[in-house]
Length: 212
Image (cartoon, rainbow, N blue to C red; front, side, top):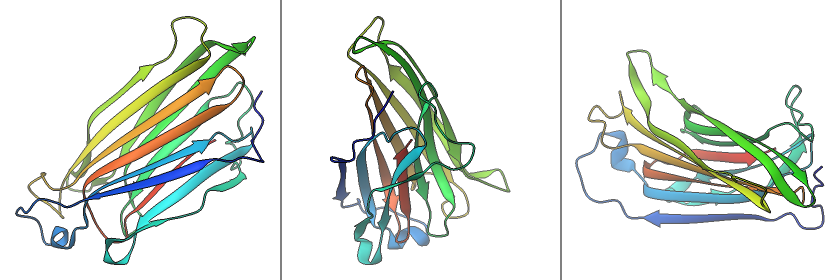
């Protein structure tokens, strides 16, 4: 149903750095890079392919935007025409541990250039610490879709995560907000746009987002 756009693969990444307000902070956070917003937009690849991009916080809090990569889907993850469109937004710490993540799966049927039916589901991941601490999901919602046939079905997914644990016992320093928008078009194409807002960030953190 879908054809990959080989001549025009659009991908945009934007970064906004906001100075953090002065406040009491745990030891690690005294080296915080402040509040950061990362965004990215990708075109859904053809079935059997996945598309991803990595954006990391490098030395001196400089944001390093990686290239858009299209590759073969892992075994067991190959998407058929009628299978869900999968997206992911994963925030890693400097040790490669996924702190918070938002995943979505959306489906659609089309006829005559219109989306005749569509649906979406979502899930989250929050890294916990052994002593009943770590990251927690504060809220997670999903809205959108069409009540009848429409040219495009758009879904907005939102999840917020807080942290209270060994690196911050107050629970007020780290807070990650993930947003993922999926647009399913009646002409067989689809796009995904994602963002993550970090109340505080740290050198070595890495955001990976993609769809397929």
